[in-house]
Image (cartoon, rainbow, N blue to C red):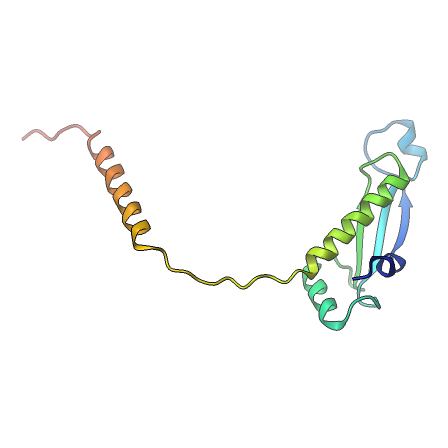
Length: 134
């Protein structure tokens, strides 16, 4: 995957951050919003696009645009770097293929050990009861 080609398809928008910060937060647009049009991207083939569409199914707009925002830092430049880094990490995670799990049997010794411990625990609790007098 060519990150420089991927970064060329990104668009950024800067808005005022919410939250505490006093005068600074009210006059500076430091929050960075990243927009990526997945459906119209030329970086990925159809198979990769389908994987990413499934991965981002709850994060995409109706038009197939991914939006990620970052307002962690007071610096606009730092927020842009952070949101880009987050985006690249998400893309990497979305393109990972899950390993097929091979089912294995539980060893007989493990089953015996569990049942033995269960019996010991049951006896321990049974011994806490008052003895029955007849």
